[in-house]
Amino acid sequence: MLNRRQFAIGSAAVASGGLVGGIAGIRLAQSESVHFTRRLPIPPLVDAAKQAGAVRLKVGSGRHAFVEGKPAPCYGYSGPVLGPAIRLRRGDEVEITVENALDVDTTVHWHGLLVPGDVDGGPHQVIKSGGTWRPRLKVEQPAATAWFHPHLHHDTARQVYMGLTGLIIVDDGSDASLGLPRSYGIDDLPIIIQDRSFASDGSLLYDLDPDPQTIQYGNRGTTIIVNGVVGPVARVPSGLVRLRVLNAANAQNFDLRFSDRREFRVIASDAGFLAAPVSMKQLRIAPAERFEILVDFGNRKPVMLETGPDTLMGIFGTVSPDGSADFVSIMRFEPTAMAATARYFPARLVEPAAANSQAAVQRRQFVLDSGICGGQRPTEMGMLPGMCINGKTHDLARIDVETRLGTLEIWEIVSVGMAHPFHVHGASFRILSLDGAPPPAHLAGWKDVVLVEDKAELLVAFNHSATPQHPFMYHCHILEHEDAGMMGQYVCA
Ligand code: C2O
Ligand code: CU
Ligand code: CU
Image (cartoon, rainbow, N blue to C red; front, side, top):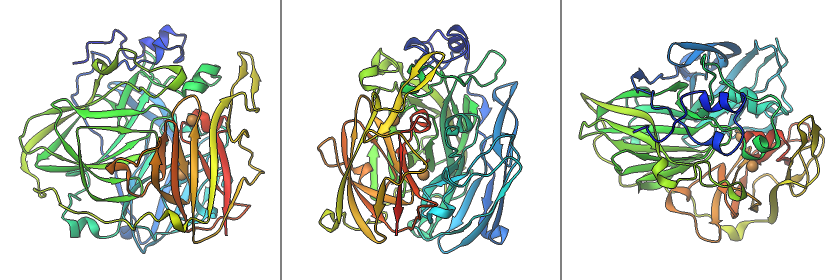
């Protein structure tokens, strides 16, 4: 199944001098030596309600074997790598104590939590090395799968790559009323997908002084990891299982399908449930997007989850040029004799309010571009490309947009050169159009990330406040683009 690529784990990267550069070097190269025998790690669940509303997170460094038997230095939240899944209930007020035990500064951004700018964890809320940050979060949003990750000015990409990613589960009771699988780690599984390149000793390869091409492509690994390991196997009950899929890659789009091409149902996107389950056989997920899917393992046959080549590199081509034959297996599911509690796909989920574009009070355009828009940085390797929105690179001291609390706006996002996953903090949106057409059903619910190949029109709901001291960000979620300046700031009052 994995025989189309010659590169073993790490060898592509070693061949290109320790970094992932050049088109050949960024092909997915899931190794034929991947055996899918390691148990899928399940991040520990931290239920805020059971902690009396006080959650502690320690950001630190540790060692973890991404590649079996080869422990390597990395970063994690309250553990060597990744972080716990934090469960929050709608209506909760939670105090989170974040301690930074790294030897560098960091921030913790709650991606997808709808909270005010002063507790959002963006680049203005630096937690110094050795310091502590204690935000209070009021959870007022519907059920969703969100996540948390660093957002430090110019050092987000590396810190995420080193392992800083955790899941947030917002529960509003609809799981139970809809009869959805909700036993965390049993029939409700976090599936955090990332790509990495490894040296032969299993350590992470990340280029600290990237060449222009690495910035343009974003950092792309040769090997896929799920929940922090190469080649995992999940043992699942035979019946309906819910997967909370998060693409936490720096840059790579994944194109997911099962090896037997079975249908699955998408039930939720970034910011909440869809109106009804959407049947699909293949699902593209861009960096920072989340989809919850229901998969029926009732036939008790083992099956692989696969991903295809990233075809959305625009003028830069395709990550894997030979097309669909290049799907690689990324994990295995093995149904057990245990029957699943959920047996039927629900017919309806949660109907979102109509996306009424007539109610918008503003229309704005954001052009995501690279290269010649100023902000280039000279290095030994030559000029690094600037990454811009509307011709400007990010400036922590500049407010780009002012919005009014309680209003809707239409944001038109235009990608130049390649597809960019656009994200807005502190707000969720509905996609009104994508490349001139209405969005497909699985992209018609509330979201906070949209992969824009050409042009998208979004109806953004501004319901959370942000001051000039603590503005919200909007940016491309290719982390190398974000670090290179493809980000802007807005206030909301
Ligand atoms: Cu995942 Cu600015 O965020
Ligand atoms: Cu965010
Ligand atoms: Cu981008």
